[in-house]
Amino acid sequence: MTPVPTEPLRTAPVAVVAFGGWGDAGDAASAVADHLMQSYPSEDLQDLDSEDYFDYQATRPQSAIVDDTGTREVIWPAISIGVAHLPQADVLVVTGPEPNLRWQTLSRLVVEALQEAGVERVVVLGSMLANTPHSRPLPVSGSPLSAEEARRLGVEVSDYEGPTGITGVVTHALVGAGIRTTALWVAVPHYVSESPQPKASLALARRLEALLDIRADWSTFVADATAWERGVDELVSADEDIAQYVAMLESEKDATEEPEASGDAIAAEFERFLRRRDDT
Image 1 (spheres, rainbow, N blue to C red):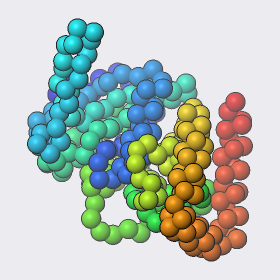
Image 2 (image 1 turned 90 degrees about the horizontal axis):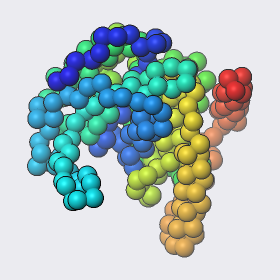
Image 3 (image 1 turned 30 degrees about the horizontal axis):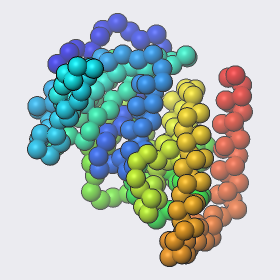
Image 4 (image 1 turned 60 degrees about the vertical axis):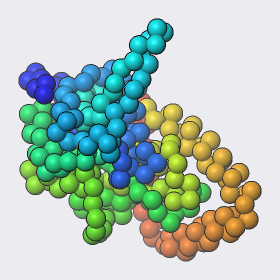
């Protein structure tokens, strides 16, 4: 396992963690992490040994053609730690498929790697299927968060109890190690859960940049979210039963939006707009 470089990053580092699989409905969470690594200068720092954490019959390696001569390469599942160099900050990114084995050991290694890199703030991303309409803002919940932070971000404080995945286990380990950590979860409409989910990814991305005080270019998500919602509108309108179901979800959603809550959300969004404008 390659050690984390000892050279300090150029700013007090922050980190984003997103795992595929059970806690990544529609790949909405991992898409945000991948976007950071692919849209900015980036480098790989460390891969955790896949043979320790994956059952290859459950999470199979992939065979890929790598050149014009037909040469093949086996791509093994791995948990990767990299760094994306945004204009004003370096962001460590931990991503990969949900492992099959040794979650507690893996969580400790992730914590140790981030500690060695001097990480002070972590946001863990997840997405879940929910009874939410695609035509309304997709709800985001988070924990641990103060009531003031939740209001500022326009999210609900999560009180979930029940089965969890590697996302929850790593979040617990980071909090237990004293690293300031927040998990953000976005709701994905269960009736249109296929990947990609740009509207859900954008909802996470906006809260992520507010929590980490970073600015990133999410324009791809913005454009794709508009096209996605338009496409889902067309699919829904073509099926009377689904259209009635979505209308019911919309009515329920609208009925639960109290004026006070809506006002807080609008104020929080306006504050985020002003901060983004000041940085341009």
